[in-house]
Amino acid sequence: MTSYKLKTGAAPFEVMDGPLAGRQFNRNGVYVDIPPNEADKFEEIKEERIQKSQGLRNQASKLPGEILESSNLKPLAADLIKSEVTNG
Image (cartoon, rainbow, N blue to C red; front, top):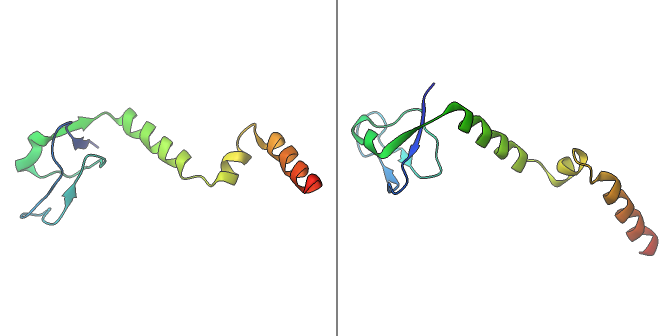
């Protein structure tokens, strides 16, 4: 499946007619369907770049506790929490 994003310098826009009427296209979006008469405003994205950005989004969506759980910081954090409780 081919994906597209707006080219650098292309202004965000909203489609006014056709099957994509009402759909907005902005610089941060990744799109599968693009308006054929506006195709020159888009560039194709390679599949590996899409997977990488999705992986970064998945990491960013983790709750702080989940990040802590999956990192090497857990023992350090436990020591800090104990210290706060003890020294209260």
